[in-house]
Image (cartoon, rainbow, N blue to C red; front, side):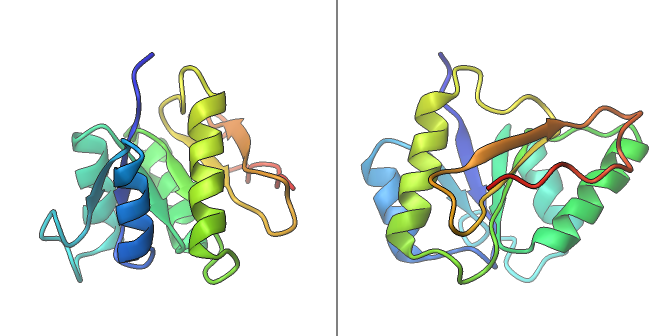
Length: 142
């Protein structure tokens, strides 16, 4: 099983989360590492896609919109983890990311989103989004 790499955008970049993930063997690249601080969302997603990284962000609505645009244009990315900002402690983010990573053998298929929801026992995967279903919002998971 190939382990995923995570690209953390500027909105979700937290040095404690990054250090905790890295200490557990997760390959993490941040917007700061990549020299992409203050760059557009499209540039962030393009970098993650080019490097085979799942993008982790708090910017749920903008990246979901971008995901839909990419699919409509026939572009693919390695997946996204979308988390509402300030809904989870660093420890809770870490637990959910690690649980998701451990329970998925193929991790995220291309162009797949995972939404972390408050009150849930863990992250649940959203529906895969084919080009035909790109305009449909995924079912929210709790």
